[in-house]
Every structure is written in C-alpha cells, then in structure tokens.
Amino acid sequence: MTRLPFRVELSNDGATYHGGVVGAVIDTTGALAAWSNHDFDRGIRASTVSMALQYVAAGSGSDLRCSARTVRRARELIFTEITASDASGKVLAHGLQTYRIA
Image 1 (cartoon, one colour):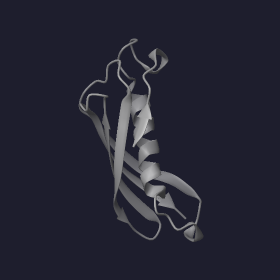
Image 2 (cartoon, one colour):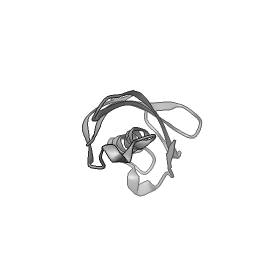
Image 3 (spheres, rainbow, N blue to C red):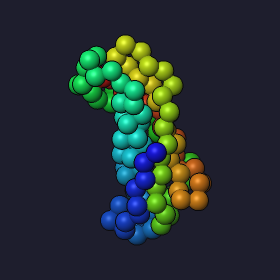
Image 4 (cartoon, rainbow, N blue to C red):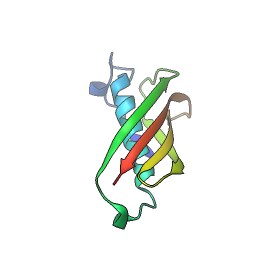
C-alpha cells in the first residue's frame, strides 16, 4: 500500500486531487506490486507497458491511499490491479496495469 499526503499544490482547486496525480500514484503502486517477489536474476530493466484508469469519485482534502495486487506474472509481463481510495476508504479510482521487467 502507498499513501500520498494531501497537498494543495497537487489539487485542481485547492481541495480535489488532479487526475494526473491519482494516475501517477496508481502507476507507482502497480509497479511496486510487480517488483514484489521478483527474481532479480531475471532482469532489472522495467517499464509500464500499458495502464487503464477508471475514475469513480473525486478525492477532496484527504490523503490518497493505493493498494495493488498482482493478477498474473508471466515471463516478462506482470499484470496488476490497483485501487485508489481516500482516508475514509471511499474508492476514487481503479487501475489495470501491464508492467514489464526484463
């Protein structure tokens, strides 16, 4: 799980997270899940191959919390699902990520 403390400069209007901030934290959290249990003898060059986001609510004035799980780990590709929530647990966004480590 990752947590981003709320800061006004990360918002659209002083109260609501900018969507790009939410997307960046989702991407980072998915990457962390992809790296978990990775065999470093299999490679260390990595990047996000694709990511789809679905914003479901606005996050206002609260820390952003993201959790991720690895759905499938193939030879070089790792598929993750990520959920972003506010501090109260209200879901703000979902992400699907394909990450590559070679």
